[in-house]
Length: 411
Image (cartoon, rainbow, N blue to C red; front, side, top):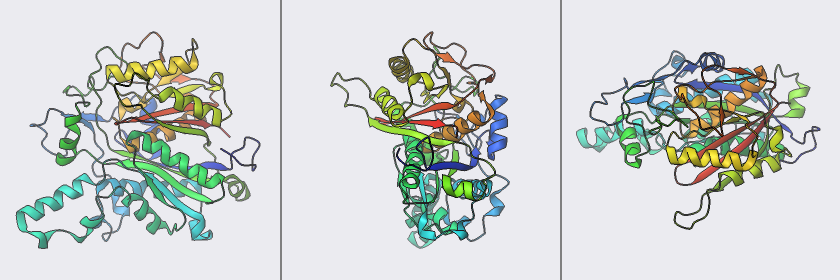
């Protein structure tokens, strides 16, 4: 990251958060549940999953604040977009930013999505085959699309500057937040709303995920998702995500921002080599590059928010990458996504928001479910751990070889 606005070299501050998660709606409710170890993983209730091998998920479903969305917007949006709109409302309100006081071309939106609007698309396909093309919603032309969250947020808040979408599965959530920070650092934007959202827990959505063979088929929600544990058998899908407001530091200071959660100090993304080439995965390289760009040494990282795939081979690869970077030092590691499931693009954004809350309060949230961790890993289990935190490393990998690493720092 470059810039001269602050001594630490970053011109972008994160001043607002909005969260929609299976174990908590709203940033503070989610944070409270996470510190208490309350899981949002349940047997699927949104539809009859009796014929599916996967029976457990982190569902959000409908929520009390959905009435804040007008009757006009509901028919044209999938649930993922409703999560995105409400969370962005909360993030902007939390930041205190008045978007109407900015030139619209200096404000923008960068979101991530991997699944798109599965549920909306399924409903319209059922209409197509059951009643004919005349019954299909005109909104099907865009409501399923990966970029729709970016478009709907920008329309809702009049954000007309650079806007885009990242599609890199779980890694995309980190990439979107980092890209928003770069745009603010480089002066392209003064304010950016960034994040990632998903709602893949639906009949068609689940069908699309199962063939990968990566999802847990364990029926007990308490034992279905156990990253780094000898009994790990895959991950549990989840829905929701987080929105973050990235603002120019000079503007935040000038208006006397109520709070600053932190900053994205460094980011890097890499892609794994094709299988069979004999080359190692590229996660460690992403971490080292992110640290270099943050002008930070491995010894300066106080906590790692792990990708935590919940698959033995992938978990071992993540442990190997951390050992390669940190050596014999056992930096505390946590995987709070064990309480939400893997939210795909929403997961990277939610982990970033969680890391910022951890830095604010000086506490590392626990990993639930997992009972035994590898000896090389100081995995925070059972209860939160109070620690003086200055820098956090957030990791995310996406199916197909995507890797992303972000260093989050206090201001």
